Length: 386
Image 1: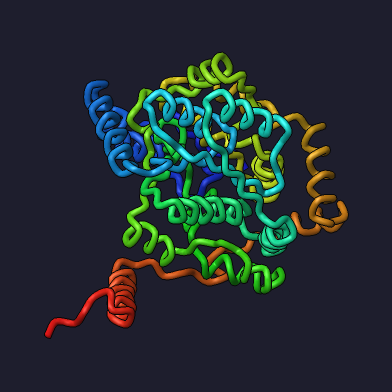
Image 2: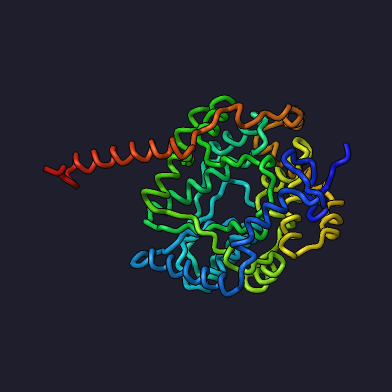
């Protein structure tokens, strides 16, 4: 079936949520323009003012502490560039790397170069592989779309937990509208902190004991980190004129950084998931979103993007190498893995969802305050009014 494609970007009807105006421009382009009005489409003076104000706030919150922020480093473009910015601005980040067992050798080398050349302390959190393997295999067996949830949830669970441990109020986020503002909602599971969905998938398809040792997040726990401990994510890159091609050149020149050939390809699993599983099992090629972002950010022409889409997501020979490696690491035979890939997609919602409505959060917040008051009263930290 022929796909209808946007006349401005290269997103098409492989997303069920796409629609087009009378000129053939898609709703995702319009949404990007709307979001960019107060972020990207403002003067350089306003951006500098916002950036300076944010840096000053981070430093003030970090006064008297060993570190004034947490920087999650994957070795990818965004987080690596954040490291340079932090150094330039005199920030004192604790660099945290989440090692889930899928680092490419190149990613390890890039990370080592970054922390050694910039002189930052590195905190590497190594997740128990057997536990993490069980979680990832559960998502594959569940046949749900977003098999990156275990990684995405646990990264933030670890970052928030370490921030709490060191009493750090700021976590630097590599998110940026310029290169990540366009992604159809039906191409991933937006509820990355959905603890109920996470637990139910593992209970059904994995070992429930895995959950007892996992530092998973969840909306309520995130609510506590954000509102009680006052730990916040800060997207500094949104206050800069962020151009990916220029940033890569700078990383190579200053940090001897090497490119991976694709967005998030610093992880072997993510490379295989995005470049093999998504296109073959779900008919989703995320390059359409990644390249559309670059088109809308003025870094690439639509014609150049369409030309790139004629190529494989990454070399077919490497795809087969990755497939064998992934199967061996998970303990699947190739026929077993192919059978799982052939299963019909199951919606995430079929496994239940955690409620995060404003009303529920208000109730949760009130209960939390009551429990906190009782705790303080019990240990005589405060006294009831006479």
